Image (cartoon, rainbow, N blue to C red; front, side, top):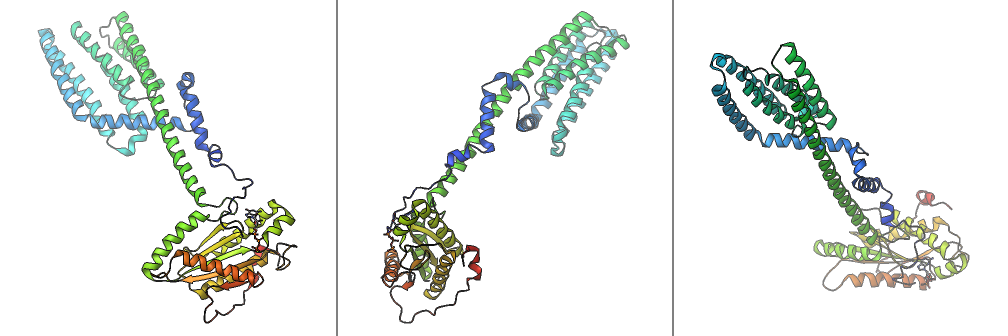
Length: 449
Ligand SMILES: Nc1nc2c(ncn2[C@@H]2O[C@H](COP(=O)(O)OP(=O)(O)OP(=O)(O)O)[C@@H](O)[C@H]2O)c(=O)[nH]1
């Protein structure tokens, strides 16, 4: 036997990084990098459900900005009220003062109503998915109302001042409202036309040239600003998503690495390092709680001749089958089947006395026999067989992990010396456990019996 010889090449194991690169995460990562490198494509809708996530993020951010700035908005609106009141009050022709003040009040209350409605709606999370609808409606009504109002005063000066507020509202609709670019543009353009229709229907004073100029410019500038904000946000969204994906990939990779570092590549059992760590842990628990730890060493008989006869690849397959069989035998959560090295395996059995370990050793032997893997150069029989060494220790001051391992190894040695294909306990107990009749029916899945 070659203890520690764990070096046989694993034939077709996928490289963990190569495996990860096939995953949807990796595909999304590639798509994001392509998008970030191509400004043209960044203008269109984002692929892979990303557009939906992006819109949700934009809306959520807009809602939290509005919630966070509610008091600033209220104060600002009161301040605007004070300023515009002063303007109207002092500039208005005394003959129309009362009428002008009424118009002012109507506009102010209407604007306040729109802001209050938006403020109330953004506080109801259930309505978040209708955000675009209510924000779009409020923007449209607010814009139309304000444009019409900017022609409603008798004083051209007040109308001109009001049109500055219209420009301000245009900018709000195109930026802070966080609507889709195309929706914001449609609202801006239709509001300009509808308001003009109302103004002409009610014969309100309007300078068409000036009207076209300031609504047209507001729409163009608003569109450019909204476009730039949208592009910046899309880029930031993709970059954040890229970081998130890379973080997830790193996590996956480190989990995969941790798994691989504990696993034997050929058999899929725990490797020797993992076995050593587990044994140390179980030993410490058993020492504290004073229960027995059993260890089973399982060595494939005459494996060198097997390799020589059937070839190394066939040898690998056989070790793999033996490993899979042993894995099934480690039934309790604390049991651990591991490849100790080369053609030697171990079964760690915490909280198991020697009688229990002996029963399991018989089952292991029967299960390997049931595989009935032909081995014509074995002197122990026609099929691949194993020699098993058993040891059981209750940890105390006079023994150690090495005691347990050395004794199990001695057991294997004794089994081999006695002719192989047998089980030996070391040290030999005063009373040998009773041999049990193993029902091999349950092992039939291993085929060959
Ligand atoms: N195919 C294959 N062979 C391995 C692997 N690891 C170890 N071996 C071989 O297993 C054989 C072990 O040989 P020995 O230690 O002489 O033991 P044995 O021939 O089984 O003899 P006994 O244990 O005394 O019955 C060596 O030929 C190793 O090359 C492996 O991963 N794959």
